[in-house]
Length: 179
Ligand SMILES: Cc1cc2nc3c(=O)[nH]c(=O)nc-3n(C[C@H](O)[C@H](O)[C@H](O)COP(=O)(O)O)c2cc1C
Image (cartoon, rainbow, N blue to C red):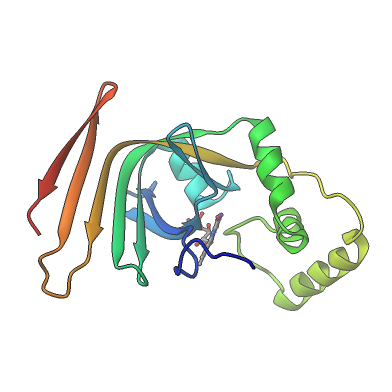
């Protein structure tokens, strides 16, 4: 019997906010891939808006909200690009369709002709379905080192339980916050 570790439908989905190059904050949902050595790993193309923004300013926030368990987690930290070896591992883990999308798509660029674009995907899917697809150059990811993490347990009464962890040098301090 397969045991489900959580009732949350997509527990990895989180909102990544970065400093936009135009001065406005930018937020989008991404998938947390893994937590390695206390850093949060996300992946995607470096030439995307988020890629450019994180390379320009590594300060980010990540927010999780899990409706099923009523929990929110807010993280602030600094993003560092992962190395090629790790990027290759994450790319290999992607399913075939996602790998093909990564190959044909320049994430965030305008599509000139939607029909031809969709046809290109079909064509590539037929051609490449048995072959190994290599990671396109520029598809990579970031490891986010946290400095501030707040856990919130949502209460109907609004007497939410909030606990903040903050890192100074190598030690973490914790404080309860008023709801
Ligand atoms: C549930 C969910 C998970 C997603 N995961 C990722 C991801 O891991 N990496 C990624 O590049 N985009 C992911 N996206 C798409 C992003 O929301 C976004 O459209 C894309 O990264 C382009 O953002 P940008 O233009 O700010 O770079 C995901 C979207 C959703 C709804």
